[in-house]
Image (cartoon, rainbow, N blue to C red; front, side, top):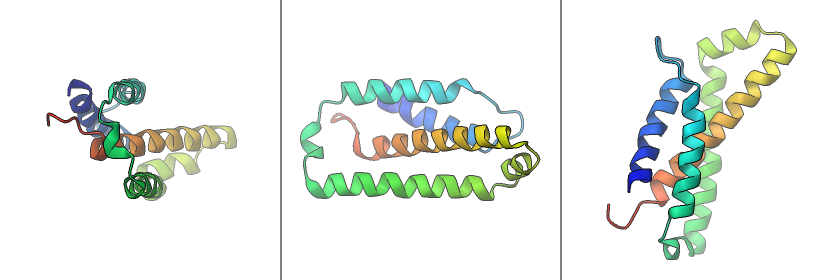
Amino acid sequence: MITYSLNIGLLAISYLHMYDLPGFHSPITSFLLLINELILFLGYDNWANLRHRFTLFTMFSGFFGFLIINFTLNLIWPAWTDSFINANPFEALGMVTGRLILCILLSISLIMAIFFRPKKL
């Protein structure tokens, strides 16, 4: 239950970090989110709920849906696009790669928040 709750908190903090709210910048949140996702995945004990084909289909389609939404929001976010346009090609490639990795982590975290709830919650 602790890692599940941490997942929710880190998910919110990571969204704040992704949209660069004024005065909020924490590059370590993505790393903490990744570590927490691994611990939550390895400690999950209710695998019987995830054996149904419909549940698996919903998980994978939800992941790709969240990934598309997150990345699209990044493409239209003015603060990010302005810095992207003014960057040289290598900086732009690094920015796109970093944002794609962050979007993947956030999409996984959202799926885990929906489908990996502990039994006691």
